[in-house]
Length: 87
Ligand code: SF4
Image (cartoon, rainbow, N blue to C red; front, side):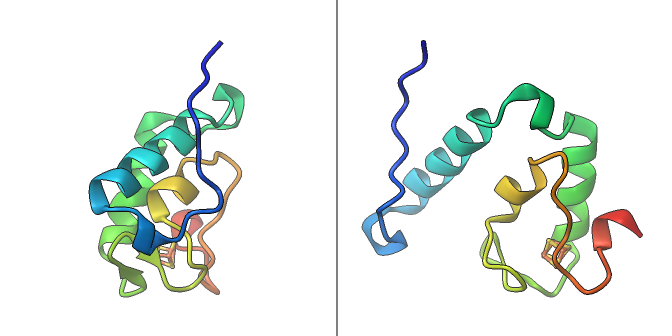
């Protein structure tokens, strides 16, 4: 069994960028496969985020999520008033 630890009580100031990316990837890996977005759809969502004014340093200012984590959830939607991922 995988015993990777995720710190839910850390502030960003306690993490460096490499650690943040590693933590986000670990959280994505922890999403059960049947609830995870398929790779093609995941890339499509992130390409939309990259063109969006609400993306700041990997974070969506509409919801405060790391977009790479939010996009990885199959049933997640874009928090914009008009869901940009499903126009
Ligand atoms: S508003 Fe939607 S498209 Fe824009 S950064 Fe946030 S999740 Fe991505």
